[in-house]
Amino acid sequence: MMLRAMTRADVDAVLAIEQAVQRFPWTRGNFADALNSGYLCSVDCGDDGSGEIRAYAILMPAADEAELLNIGVAQVEQRKGRGRAILAAMLDEARARNMRRVFLEARHSNLAAIALYRSAGFAEIGIRRDYYRNADGGEDALVMARELTGEPNG
View 1: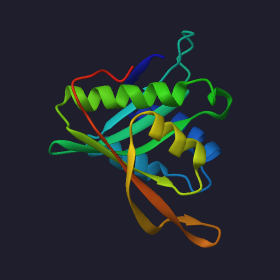
View 2 (view 1 turned 90 degrees about the horizontal axis):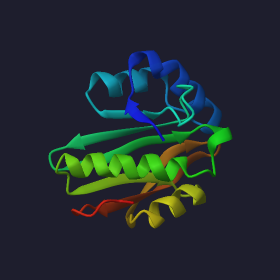
View 3 (view 1 turned 90 degrees about the vertical axis):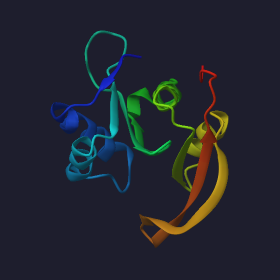
View 4 (view 1 turned 120 degrees about the vertical axis):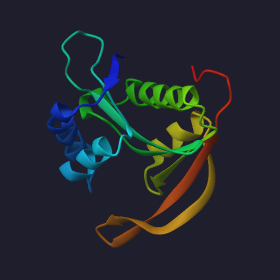
């Protein structure tokens, strides 16, 4: 994995991945707002030297906590450990900035994401009713949190 800060020039590639992997994707404006707000926006350009964006993540710091707002992996790169790797890198970045906890929401139906987050040490702390849009109107979100320590994520 080759992780670097997302730039405005990356938004088209990130948006293409987002639109391919999410039924209700973020907009170009959402990504621009994250960049403009100074959130930790990272892209994984792979390890083959091509520079092609394969995954991305957005972390919003607030005081000594952070919220993982978005994470996505290109379809052809899924099930290869990229999601786990970029999640670990974002947790390491939060730890390096002295964050003590990271929160996130996951669609109740997104069992693969929930399993990934659990395996990375996140625990369920609540439910947000009808938090996400879906074809039937709304879908619950599982709210999860992970306490950060001095230990690397590995």
